[in-house]
Structures are given as C-alpha cells and as structure tokens.
Amino acid sequence: KPIPQGVVLHSPWPNLDYFDSNVRFVTDSYLSLKLAYNLRQLAIGKDTNWFEVTDEELSKISPKDNSFEEFPPVYITAGTNEISIDAIRDMTENMRLSGVEVILDEGEGLMHTYALFHLWSPQ
Image (cartoon, rainbow, N blue to C red; front, side, top):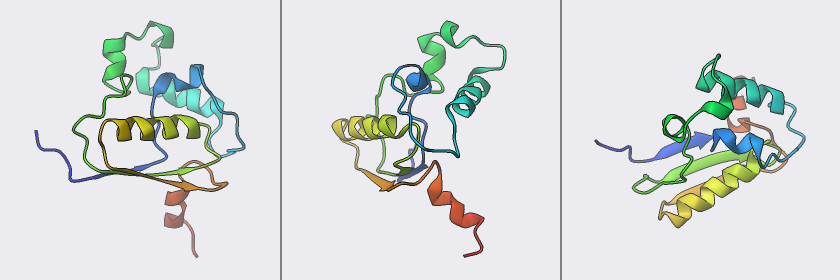
C-alpha cells in the first residue's frame, strides 16, 4: 500500500485508554474529561463496554502498541492546556524512538484544536 508523504495531526487522541490511567487535569474548558469519555464511547460503539474491548479490536482504532515503524514525517499541533497533552508528548517521543521525523508544535496555554480556530475567526 502506498503511504502518504506526510501527516498533519491537530490535537491527536493518541490512545483511547489513556483517560483511564494518566489523565492530566488541566484548564482546557473546550474539551472536558466527560466529553472525552463520551467521544470514546462513540468510537467503540454505543452499547460496547470499554472494559470488554479486546486488544485486537482496540488495535483497529487506537495505536495501543505504540508502533510507528514506517510512518511518514509527522507535524503535530497541540495546546499545553489539553487534557491529553502528556499522552501527545509520549506519542511524539515514541514516534521519534521509532525513527519517525516528527515536529510537535505546542501552543502555550492553548486548548484542544487551537490551530483550527482561525477557520471560524473573522480576524
């Protein structure tokens, strides 16, 4: 299969089970922990119990094994006030350890998907 020449990720969600183990409570009022749980439920299926999802099922929607071999170059934007900023930093480091050329552009004091807000701003 052909792979893209590069990937741009805006406030990625590195791991769906991240919110059960290492949540960083920050001041991101745009994306709350409750909303993150609800979005995760949508990703796995409304009637699916998160704790019954198998590793095989999860591997189709979340890079649980942190395997980034043969990834193209990646550019990531993330706000330092995101609830998943630590997971994004961990993912970035795992990419580097896998030999991926990756840039993490952190917006100091900014929230989830800050880089996309210019699309709706009149400025």
